[in-house]
Amino acid sequence: MRILIADDEAIIRMGLKAMLIDLGHDVVSARDGAEAIEKAAHRLPELAILDIEMPTTNGLQAAKAIYKKRPIPIIILTAFSAENLIEQASELPIHGYLIKPVEPAEIKAAIAIAKQRFADVQSLEEEKRKLQLGLEARKLLDRAKGVLMSQGMDEEAAYQAMQREARNSQRKILVVAKEVILNGGL
Image (cartoon, rainbow, N blue to C red; front, side, top):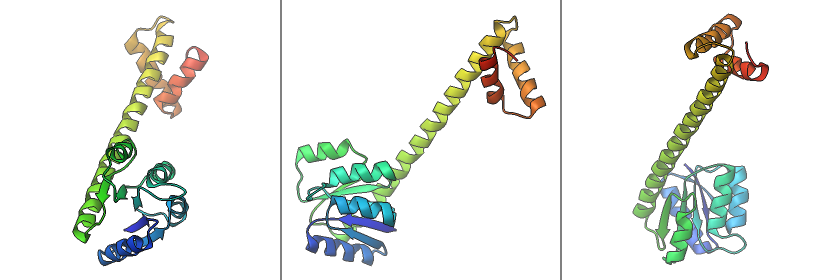
């Protein structure tokens, strides 16, 4: 994987980079959150590990900005285990939280968990999107049936008329339903 790491402490950054390279990853490093945001846009990492306390832009701000532009799994790295920071991180698209110093086994496990949590979230988002589209389509069809029913058709006849029109004109039924609503009928 191409992993973006951001930490303002050079020694930590170098140590993380070495660990990740030993685990077989390609590493892009940044000195602070602002640089991490810029590098995420150009280098297209598949995962980010961001220190929570950095100058200019902290890890939480960077996580929010990176995820907004191109969602990827994000792990927050910190020397602090303060409740307020954990609470702030839990309100963001964070998929893991590590406390320094980090061992290779811990980082390997955190990456695996973050990738899976991210995949789960993406799957739920896709399912949500499909359900919303289905609901919108259902509402559209119901409105179109209502228009046709106001002209004397029963519900089944209204639906069949739209199906027939869609089939005969080789268009989708939702296109026909929109036209029925716009034109007040078939």
